Image (cartoon, rainbow, N blue to C red; front, side, top):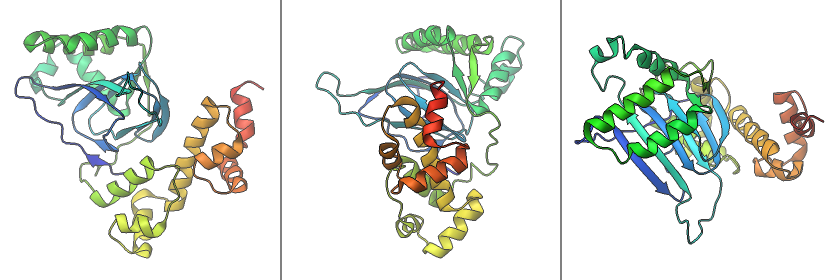
Length: 289
């Protein structure tokens, strides 16, 4: 998959990008950037796409993403209340792998951080008690300035580097060696499919997004993705259905519709082929039945 390359703004008053986002929903599409990203979702729920994984996220989650690791947060549909007009909130720090200078990472004291940043190439999720401690420090980081802020960020990274309370997010993920050769054509298509996972897919519409005729687009997509458009969309929808089966008590028919399947029989057949069990049995196993 080839996502959009996000241009992280350079801050004239600091060596890394730090922002506190409060929005109705997270706005970045499926993207990547060479900068390392430490992302603390203060408040929001939905699905996150990191590398080749699709998982549920909720408020409080902190992840560390390595250089050029594709990612995207898709919020649940939430109608902002008057007292909370911006239900999606995050604190995000992004910095170039060599933002402190290459010799800096060769120091004995900083080599653990360098190894951590390399491990983050598959994404790392912070667990307790590390997560709560780092969350507190990230909130405080917003109030710091200058060298105090920089050393506070290095302290956070050093703490993560020496902790075992981290979980790989996308083990086995191998980044596309051409990921930095941005493909705007494929990026538009993948971004549209991920953001509209439950919507009907029209080959003509998708091909138009890529500025190609349908036949040429089908050949192009298969050559780039290693699977047909139909296979890709079906896999994406089944992973989305797995999330709904896990966290809701909605009927199988309702989940089939919410996942973009117009035919319940086809949904059950495709789900069984991908997961090895029917949707109903999948849910029963989750509940120990």
